[in-house]
Image (cartoon, rainbow, N blue to C red; front, side):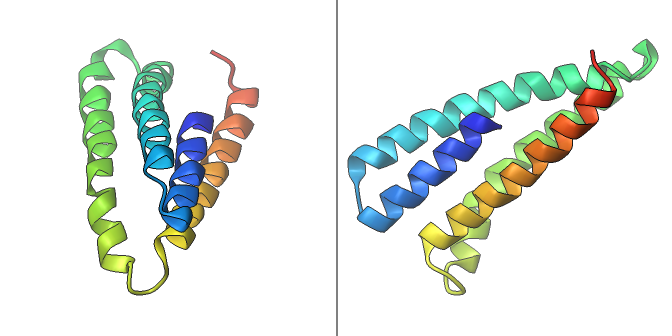
Length: 111
């Protein structure tokens, strides 16, 4: 999540400063963050699931993870409400909230 949050913040800076170089950095961070969160998400859902439920939970996780490809559409639809830097920063704040919830839950339930 830290990588995704960093990518969102770099993306906000790129949109604010109209910087192609920062767009490339944001793309690398967001791509790496997506891969990391996909892998760690699969590990997290497998931990509490009984073996017989693993295929179903993995299927649901993949579906939820791939729904993230709708994010650019959501950003385009909401672009009239706020500038892109604000939208990307807002997404980073949501990411921080998700990171906080995950960290808090993981402390009580170590792998």
